[in-house]
Image (cartoon, rainbow, N blue to C red; front, side, top):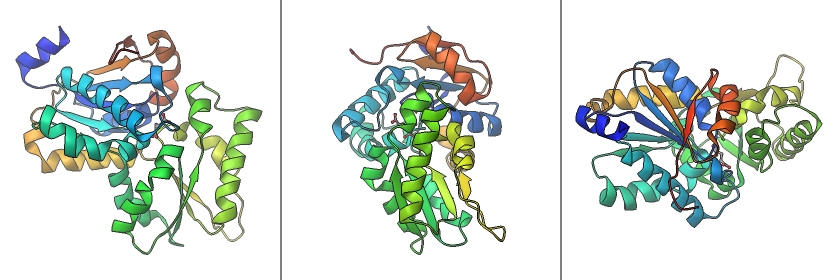
Length: 289
Ligand code: DGL
């Protein structure tokens, strides 16, 4: 029904995808900057987390979700997930899109972040906190190297953070233990970083605990903690300016629609912490589980 409506209008919402709730931290910033557009969010909560999964599985799952969003008419999709951006985006853009949807676009979150991250650092030493998949892909090392070759980038995988956040464990002794552990491991190998990139769209929910465990330095020196939402939102504004052929395919009624492959009830219970307001979602199937 919704699909027929959008087909008739020849415009459709911008698709925002994440393995779970994390992409809502990106959608929140995008919707604040571009409120007039329609957005269709898809969280693959049934199969989250993606971080520990192998390359082929992340590619297959991400492509299924992208095809689902194309099926809903989306002319443009943002993979608001670093793991999917690292492991699946290039193949989707180069191999799948020319065959399945040459007139649509799929964008990621790593490149827009890499384009600006060096501007935050004075010491030119940056720490990247991400999932196992993102860290192992070395996508940030490669992408940041293109824009800021002088930057020293140290990576740290934080495999327990997404499960904690997906389960709403944002405070408490267990969460503090794992925040302290991964931060400690990063700062032990890179004590001079002055900028920490939260290179997973789930991690902004842990920012208060992360800040709690940052070292206190004398003389006003401090470590900046950078989330991607605002960066990705600005980059989308720029993209839509540069690509009016896609901008005009995006519907503009200020609608936000939320789909999850998991339980809609669970999604609605957790989503407001990420999105900043109440959410009513629908359960959908994107594949045969
Ligand atoms: N929000 C995803 C990211 O940015 C989490 C990935 C996962 O499911 O492990 O990487």
